Image (cartoon, rainbow over all chains, first blue to last red; front, side, top):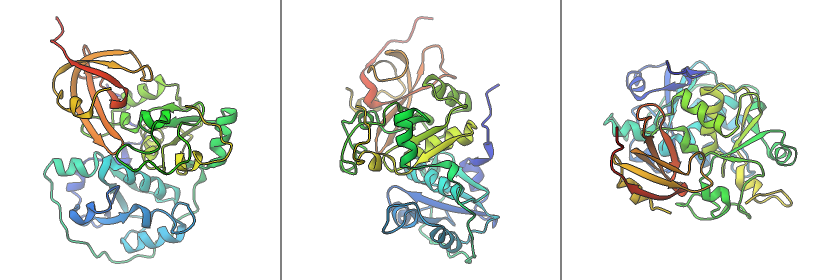
Length: 281
Length: 76
């Protein structure tokens, strides 16, 4: 019998979502790489999030503040008791990032729609351009959970003392330093190419199957074990800006149940511009 | 290195993939391409290796694939 996910409750399939479109307990949030995608059509009842405007602070580079998230979730009609379903394009790149952010701020019941927006559309399920107007709530986040977020000093320590195991989920040419960003994007964002010394290159897409859904637990376990990424280690996942790595973080921490896994949202755009930081190519 | 469209044209076919030394595992993998995933950071190919058709699918970013050739089915 196949191994079960450590926390199967964090994933829902498209059929489950289709059956809960009118469930008042369930709130849908769409967040895409392509910020125009939501306006072209989305799941009925879904509120759209803009990854730059809603998930980051506007001036200082940082994740969205507690006050921002409070406001965002309140406007989306979400209460601390809501079941929040996140999905998006590009195989949920920013949906899992937003999911990580909700966990950082202590939301209890958040789930990812397995396969994301593409799978929903491939199955011919309903889409709408209607923008919902949920009844506003007064959401209050909990104290942030720093155990799931890596910062620059954590990564520098890992590079210098091997205090953590690093997983670089970027494409092979970004890892090798040939590219500074995904090949479809402008080559900018960091001053240097390469990777953090000692990091294993496990591109994010190795976590998923051809239809975009996550691989079964036994295949995920084999994937990471083969690269020496084991449950007894402290693991830090990174990419370029922290969204692709949130997929690996999600798979390691919630699907496989590794206890100590952090997502480094500063990622290569921060590390690759640090003066004096060790880099491997 | 192969182009993404080369791999896309081989979906459903049995192939032999020659992989770069940076890829994990064996340098040559034979099996059926079960699908590809297009993402902003490049295409990813999923292959069901011979003998593990239903269980052990492997996934490779196309940057790792040096060549992909159609192959005849394995002898059983």
